[in-house]
Every structure is written in structure tokens, then in C-alpha cells.
Amino acid sequence: MSKVNMFFATGYEEVEALTVVDLLRREGIEVNMVSVTGEKEVTGSHGITVKMDKLFEEIDDSADMLILPGGLPGTTNLKAHEGLVKLIKSYDAKGKYLAAICAAPTVFGGLGLLQDRHATCYPGMEDGLVGATPLEDNVVCDDHIITSRGLGTAIDFGLAIVGILKDDVTASQLASKIVYTTEM
Image 1 (spheres, helix red, strand yellow):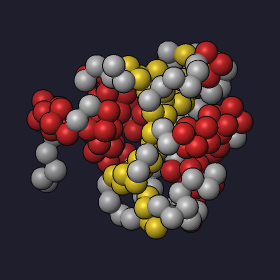
Image 2 (spheres, one colour; image 1 turned 90 degrees about the vertical axis):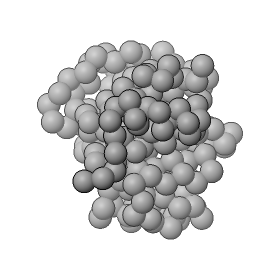
Image 3 (tube, helix red, strand yellow; image 1 turned 90 degrees about the horizontal axis):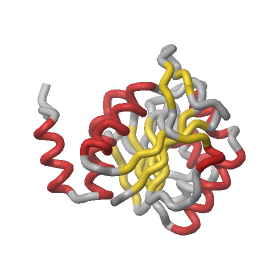
Image 4 (cartoon, one colour; image 1 turned 180 degrees about the vertical axis):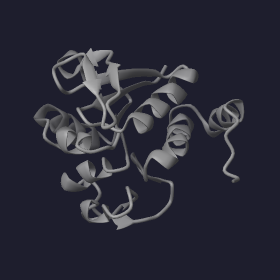
């Protein structure tokens, strides 16, 4: 079974985070919601407090993927966590999956991990994708790095991750189960 660690800092974007957690858990992917605050409860950018599964100090590097939700000041708080930065760099060096949505891809850009890659982020934050060719796609997968634009693309982001950790058929079946279509 695949295992993912998603990191929560004060001010995370609730829908981006919890949509992805929900979709992955529906498909049997183990998701640890990990607090980088030192507290088991973390409050998002819209005042919603969620209980975490683990503190940062309780995890190791055995997960298949690290995921960063966006939101402000959540993204800024993730960037400031030295242990998380070290872990992200370690995953990149090993070619292990890294994923981020909304403002959070700028964490990867700031660490130099997007050099000569394609990536996407929240509109207007493209300068934070240092070294990347910015795209406007809902989700961009470039080797082991997955990026997405924002709250409105959270389902696409979650389904893309299911496709990577399981397969495209499973992701398509999940989209059908949740009655997800891209038509307006």
C-alpha cells in the first residue's frame, strides 16, 4: 500500500488539503496528516481547525510522496520549517514524489527543485516557480514533481496523485464514483 505524508502549517488552505486527503483515503492510500506546528490541531486560513495524525517529529522518510497544500500564511510557514525543507530536498535527491498545490509549489521553486521543469501554481505567483517554465494547466506532472493551481483544481490534483500511486483506471473510476466531470 502506498503511503503519503501531507504537511499542515497554520494558515493552510482547508479545501485543497482535505479534498486530497479524502480522495486518497477512498482508494486505500495511507495518508498521514502531519503538523509542522508542534501541536496536534492546526487551524487553516479560514479558521477551520483539524486534528492531525502525527507531528513532524513522529515521521520518517518512508512515505512514497510528500504533499504540500497551499494557502497563506500556510505556505510561508511550511517554507520556514527547517526539518521539512531538509526532508523535501532529500526526497528530490532520491527522485521520490513531491506534490504541491496553489502557493505551495513556490516552496519547491525557492529550493531550486523546479530548474528546467514545467510547473503550475496559483495565478500571479509564477515568479516563485524559480527556474521552471510556468504552465496554466490544472495539474502539471514533470518527472517526480506534481504541481497544481489552487482550490478549484484540488479534485484534479487528487485524482492525478491517485493515478500516479495506483493507476489511471483507478483514478477514472474514482472520478466517476464522486460524480466528477469537467463540464460546466
